[in-house]
Image (cartoon, rainbow, N blue to C red; front, side, top):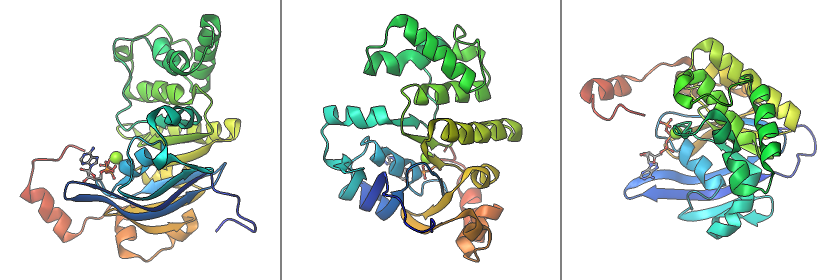
Length: 267
Ligand SMILES: Nc1ncnc2c1ncn2[C@@H]1O[C@H](COP(=O)(O)OP(=O)(O)OP(=O)(O)O)[C@@H](O)[C@H]1O
Ligand SMILES: [Mg+2]
């Protein structure tokens, strides 16, 4: 629990349920996110983490329940009304998804062109500032294909913060990176949070990163919230599912699943 008077949450999910056909991706999620804090969301593949994030910016709408951004019902907003929310909330997508046919600079400038009237010289300036902030200065004229995976993540990160959002949603920011690069990204998330007083929500499978950056941790499982607490609560929990997840130990049934089907292993 945060100490004394808790701040008013900036984002709130109330009883949010979402199904795709027979798949119940979210089964009545209640979550709040406080301003200026970093919340790390953990949970096995397919438990609903990305689906949860997409509800926050109205990319998905709940079947039941409510999604609040401050005092606005995101789940009720029309597409054109969501523009304002999406300007205030940066989203680092799981797939990174840079435009391959654009330079790094054009990629980062893209939200500025879409959402603002910022002049061309000012766009160049902001792109350079972002590249410096994420630690890859001077790469504006390079093509994404010429960069390493770690550099591409940083460029994608620069693009998701170029509008100077209040909230950033990171969907697996370190997946596919070596431990050193992961640490760089973790430090970057911390630095951005301090420099821009961001509210950060970070979905990750990367346990060392999670403990480095979290003020609050959330564990999801099968579309439900299993636990919310401070990192210390997670370190000391004796909940078997959470322990196994943090220690990276599969149950015998999970091992059986893997040997049983080699198809559908893509995440
Ligand atoms: N657009 C969609 N259409 C149909 N099913 C979907 C869609 N998006 C997600 N799902 C399903 O909802 C469930 C939750 O998916 P989600 O992407 O949130 O998982 P996740 O926790 O982010 O997993 P991972 O760690 O692998 O990214 C999965 O069973 C997934 O197949
Ligand atoms: Mg996901």
